[in-house]
Amino acid sequence: MKSYDLLELATRNLRESKLRNGLTTLGIAVGVASLVAMLSLGVGLQQLANSRLAKSGIFDTVYVTSPREWNDDDQDKKQPQSNRIVDEAAKAEIAKLPNVLEVAPEIRVMTDIRYKEKSYPAFLGALPNSAKNGDAFENMQGTFFSSSTAKEAILQKDFAKTLEPNPNDMIGKEVVLRYAERHAGEAGATSQPDDQYSFSVVRREQPLKVVGIIDQEPFGGMRMISRARIFLPTEMADSLNMVQFSDVRSAASSDSGKSGKTYSMLVVRVSSAGKVEQVQEAIKKTGLRTYSIMDATKSLRRFFAIFDMFLGIFGSLALAVASLAIVNTLVMAVLERRREIGVMKALGAGDGDVKKLFFAEAGAMGVVGGALGVGMGWLIGRAINLGTTIYLKRQNLPPENVWLVPWWLIGGAIAFAVVMSLIAALYPASRAAKLDPIQALRYE
Image (cartoon, rainbow, N blue to C red):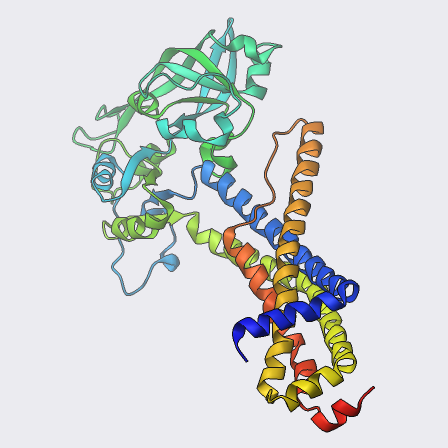
């Protein structure tokens, strides 16, 4: 039997029982719609989580510390123990590595802020230029730093409230930063003249102009500096040479063999998340220790894979029920068309031709039902997005897109509907092919 004749005959047979075939096709559509709606919700939630984490600037970030920060048990016994510290030389060396866009020290110190003749203790954190693209600064009051060396400050909203009843009034005002400056090589009375680890501490003051107020923690609260109360540009904060914990640690460690400025941690921004592992390996070869959030997100990706799997399973249950309707519809078609099948066989149609006819009818219902189901699933997703937007607005939160239908899901849903329809047609097609033409012609 030619393909054209097969398609024409299948279309004619489907038209003869419009109500029953239509309800069966609608059942397939409902099953596909539930599958598409659930999977698109899973895809949308995963996309939302990834975009938020990416905006926080932690996916493309590598944290670099000295191996001395860790216990010996954490080290690979086959590798020699490295005593390298994180200093200016390490910073310059890492900045030259391929795929490295930015290297900034992690600066977080305890300072004193003076405003209107009153002093307020506060933790200070340093922000690189790349931080302005983070979600914490999307709805900030004021502006980001004008340059990496500007003598400007951004205040955390709760801290700004302690300075002024209306925190936004702090924008444009001046505050005075009081801090301890490190002076290397100035030994005390009990130090040796050539002691390279000694340093003196001098109290300094630095006027700062407040340019912005934020009410969210930078970097999604995932870094130590996120919980600071006042933020400065990294280069400007580094130039102040403030005393940090790493300075005290270096002075107490006689095996450092280094003098000068040291850091507790360097934050390396990579060109893309896919290059993070490559950059980590290159930094490890310099004798330093690395960590990235990509190490922790492996479990997050595994969670979403399991989550999507279960959503797909539950969404497929309705399609499985629709498959039973296909079996019922085609079995009834076999009973109603026994005489027609007998005539076809008498005219030379083989068992394979009869099977092809029933598979064509089932496939047609699968294609139409799958297409309708994708459309219904899309409408359900739009309704979910609309309801979510209304709810978030009532909670004074920005709208979010929690639903997404990629092209692979559309094609996959229709293909899955067709495959399920063909599987459901196996028994009716086999039963029709086994009919005895003589008995079929006698059937009334």
